[in-house]
Each structure stands twice: as C-alpha cells, then as structure tokens.
Amino acid sequence: MKLTQMLLFGLMFVVGQDCLNAAESLDEQLDRISARFASRVAGLLDSRDASVLKLNVVENDDAVEAGKKLNDGLTRELKQRKIRLDSGAQHHLSGETRIVIDGNRSVVSVKCVLTGARGVEVAVFRERFIAVD
Image 1 (cartoon, one colour):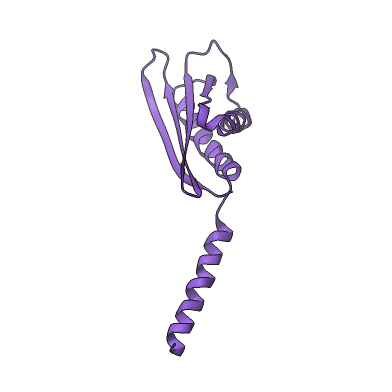
Image 2 (cartoon, helix red, strand yellow):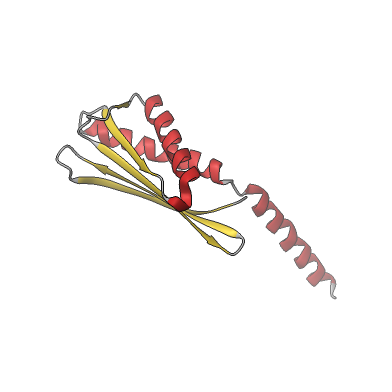
C-alpha cells in the first residue's frame, strides 16, 4: 500500500469517527427540534396577537417514547416563551412522530401543524433525522 493511500485511509477513518462522535441521540434531537418548533410557533402566535395554544401530540405505536419526549419538550419550550397551554384555545398545535427501523438505524420523522382560530392551517413544521442509539 502506498504511503498516500495509507494517509488517505487514516484521514477518512478520523473524519468518520468525528462524525459519529458528533451525532446526536433521539432525545438530543427531539430537544433541539422542540426548541426550534416552539420558537417558530411563538413568533407566529405573536404576529397574530395570541399567546394561548392547545397542544396535542399523537403518540403512534411505533414512536410512543418519541411522542412523549416531543410533547414534554414542546410544553417546556412553549412555556419558556410565555405561551400558555389551554385545552380551549383557538390556536392548535398538533404533533406526530414516526420511527422506521432501517437495518441498524432508526429514521425519525417529526411533524407539527399549527392551525388558526377557524381551523385553517397556518404552518407545518417537519424534520427527519437518523437517531443514534
């Protein structure tokens, strides 16, 4: 093996290791997504002079834990942004998580839909990622 090939192989190994070390777990990803979605929702509610929201996260059979984690994260993040959660609110945020196992990795899909006072869709937020165990 030539020296340049050995150096190139070593570099690829080191870069690959850094990528694996930088990967985030399912919980870390859902925390980041909750913060990002809550920030967007708070901005949209503020533009509509609203600060009350009904939150409903569906817990699918394949992603019960992820659904609970998303619900907890959104609740925490929305409250930090002074959004009051109330089951009688005019604006609704519904969320859904799905996990598909593909070999030795989990592909996670998160979707939240914000609807307005008349049930009209205001915004849709989606994220997909590969969770690291």
